[in-house]
Length: 385
Picture 1: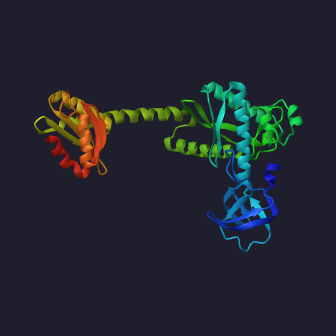
Picture 2: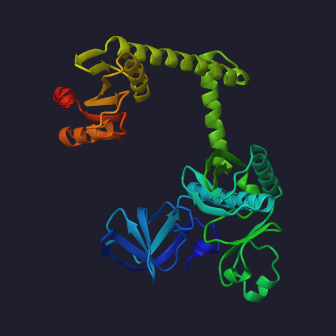
Picture 3: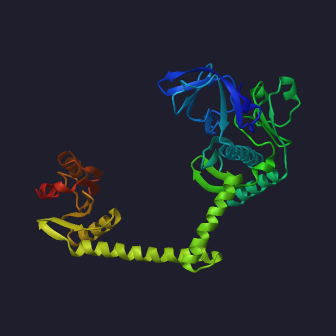
């Protein structure tokens, strides 16, 4: 019997072992009754112990559930004590109930479709098929917290079809609910769900977004609830205190301070990039007729390309190669102003890849690639030829 389906607050249980043994996953037992949530529906399994032995894996089969133990179960008594990690269970109950509230609010206010709901031990999120504005997102959180503070009861139902006909709160057609376990938040939401939940919305305590990610089909809304929310708030406050002490700037001035620092960093990076480009230009050498090579110790692809374009203006008839060493790899850019009809640059790079174990590609007039730095000299001779 799945006792967690009727009561999410059970933390201990004495029950009977119905089967024990070893299979490809390890040592297992099956139980007559259980309070251990096995995972599913986007919610992780409980952390639990059987006779004080940690449960390391839970496998749901067609006829039973197998609980895999850290130690061999050969010496277990017929009657065993089960215990779950209540702190983790309650945290997941808060997240899961908060997810129901926030998702329903988004559906009601903005007619979004919900998908890919997921709760982990560190993160909770779901996807919506619409991109909401910052004001709409703020409205959704405010409304969700109103529901939480409204002290609404949360019920576990196993309704008959007759009972379903009397319900007016549906997020899916009534036929889908027939015979299923439903979670009902009084006069607000009713939905089929197999997870664990609190008994009252007030136990969720509060909800807030932690991250919003936009994608082609809509948004992924990351959020946190309850004790996890307050722990995160405390952690954030400690980090802010550390930052204000280190910068000697009050919290209200941190945004402006870091914006100023980022602008300085951007300026220094632009100067460094210009220096790298100039270094590549000034150290360039025509190591063979119409073949110019320049290598810098530190340069990125964009800087290699900028330097090559400027060198092509100085040497309009030459093949230009700018390069840099990254670990044991030579990263290079090739360019020329006039196409070589016999061997366009893209084809040249393709031959280089085959001959020197490199990677890359390009068009007739330019391209980028890499190859082992140990092949540099042989590769340069290949280009000259």
